[in-house]
Image (cartoon, rainbow, N blue to C red; front, top):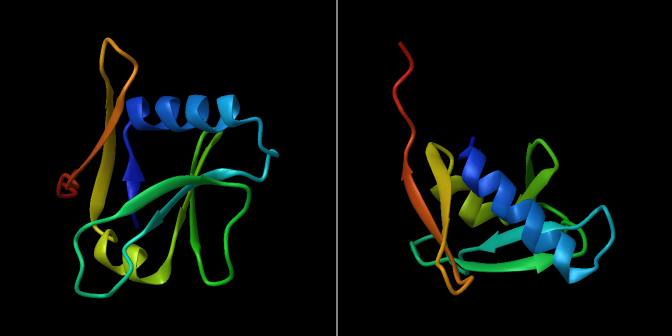
Length: 97
């Protein structure tokens, strides 16, 4: 299952909070097709039917089925520039010891 870094969790919490959406809201990741490794990211008021929900603290991420399959063994990180622009990055999860 996709995991979130502490930074990504904080960034997602802040993005959702500033949108003024309900507490059921989260960040939705959509790949569009099973072959695509490009993802659309947007704040959504709630998950759509079939979405996998990843929760880390107060951060919620909704993964559409294709994105869920593609990101199953990945970790989501985030960076915020000095201007406030958010950039998400996908990396490999550390192997379990």
